[in-house]
Image (cartoon, rainbow, N blue to C red; front, side):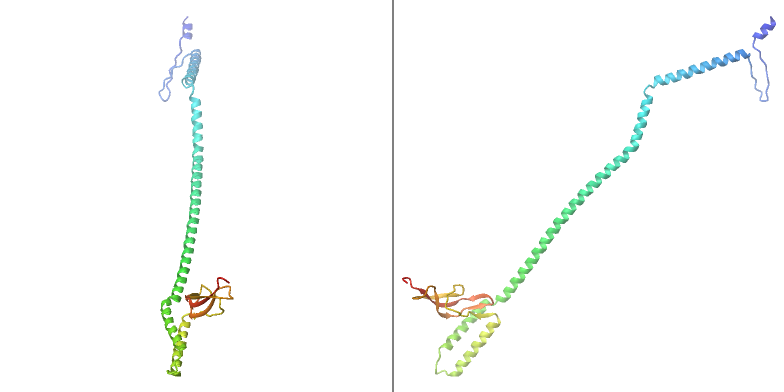
Length: 246
């Protein structure tokens, strides 16, 4: 009986190790049962923990995956966004460059037009200056021609009492005046035929005549002159005109 109790009772042995650690060792059966019980308890706790995790956070995995996908997307998006920005900047710069080229062509065209206008104005001023220089003495020369007219009349009216020396002196003055006028570009209108030309003739006297179809110069009363290629004064003439009843 005593032996049975000793078998059923827990056997305890006290061992004193070097570290003064005391361990209580139970029966082998009790130890095995205790280990099994602890394993079941541990498994139950693990199952409960996993269940709680799965029940308490049913969408946690999905949210985590979405968050990771978003992070991955965020890693790609900045590059694409930067590329879009660069493309937009490039397109803007190309537009600005195109506008600048167009503006440059417009300014170039304006500059060339202004340059051409300035060149034309310069040429026009040079022509006007040249014409002014050539014809600046027009009024003076007209007055001088009156002197020539008087000399011509004096030569035509010969007075025997004056003698030959007077005529020679007047003729010399007349030639000198003509040379002076010629140097200034003044030349008399030469009478080539009897045709009346209103561009160079001025009719002072008109007289009807037979046998003509157009007006003709009958007599030059006062010579006309050119200044270079411009009419300085017309020739005063007497004109024959066709008879009306002819």
